Length: 91
Image: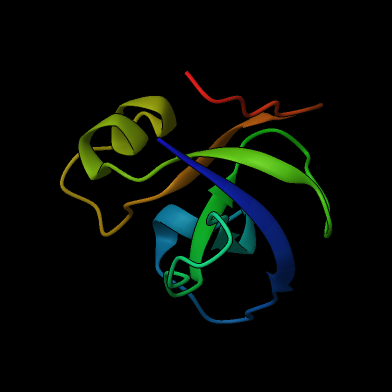
């Protein structure tokens, strides 16, 4: 699971059938100050999130395929939650 920020949407008229009727978003994993940011990637939105939302992303294909009810399809990442707040503290 990754905590990420939704930074954009994907609009496509031609796509694999597994993506039909699915909202696809571009997400940027969050990182701590001083850490190198990971690359942004696309994820199927299962939560009705929007640009600017902080979200929880499942980046494991088997879990995403299970949620979507498909098998052996080219899908890897899904947004599974919208995060209201995050608090970091020294432990």
